[in-house]
Length: 341
Image (cartoon, rainbow, N blue to C red; front, side, top):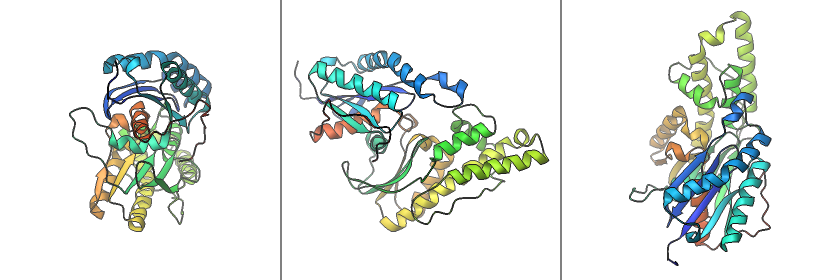
């Protein structure tokens, strides 16, 4: 039955989470995520295992999303999928499934930039929920395990990268530090948990980058040498000072991010600032980001926790906007592991 409703199926498969989401007229009806616990034993995501798990998970995940939303496949207007950046094998599973399903249904498919999806997560809302969308132009700090970017968002279509990490991402710095001190993967949330119980008593060398770019590789090295030297003097140093170590590491990473964001605010004078990406779930960063907005007297936007980490709702949201513009992807569209915003 034909209707005037716009219903978008979003599929996210950039790393180790298989996501499927349904948006109806821009409102979220379902957001399903299938995780992959297998990687915990390896201390990080194993690409081959991730792609195999996506193959197992993608059909049931989409089925659950459609059932929860109360939507039939025939009612879909378009299918949006992550085209990059991410793990190539994982991207191929999601993109191949999405394009095949769209072809079979005779509807368009829409390749979505994963980082654009994170930024547009601020526009997600459910039926009956009040909207609190950032006003253009807004400054987005997007922080995840693979990317760290400052983006000036002029509109849904026009986004300008002002600065990014020159090496490692902030999320990687959290996870690698967690591994150094014996915390299981994923370690970022555990550092946050322990940081709440400690004090930032220790200091580390912060890379000095003049512009709006950032660097976290040197910080990881500084932490590594610090731990090595302390353990020589006190073999049980990590166990005895775990909470303070976590608080100190978190404080240093957050300071780097906030200093760069503050500098970008002074230069570009955005109307609002917005935080997104998996590390946006970090309590220390959320608090510091909120304080920064108050200092500058501008609006602050931070998504709900469920929209910070990789999810299909943000892909469906980006797909919704692209569908409104009639911007579709052909079957020849190939995912890219290193896609640039």
